[in-house]
Length: 149
Image: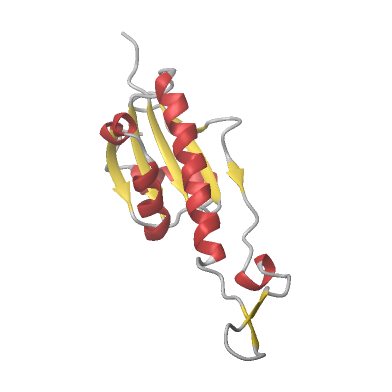
């Protein structure tokens, strides 16, 4: 009988780690080639250039143009979309049957919004906590109640 494969996704707004569990007593094994980390830039690093200027319609005044979106929020939302695309692509190839997601609350919301319904149905548990900095050998203890590692 083929084992039920559970993927554990550990993410925040710019870092992704995916682990695989192939059944009771098999532990969590990092999935090679899918982990990624984007640079965590602050607003001032992203907006290094001076803002554009706008001429006033009345008089001779000019003022800076404020961005319509927070650049950090935009970057984190875009990262969540790429994570969702990866999960959808791997789901369609049958790489896993069940999914557990552990992510910071904001990243979890962004990721949930980006997931397709098929992957959404594969989710068996969510942990609204950033575990991206937990060492790999210690990661399994956070999921003991959700899967038999």
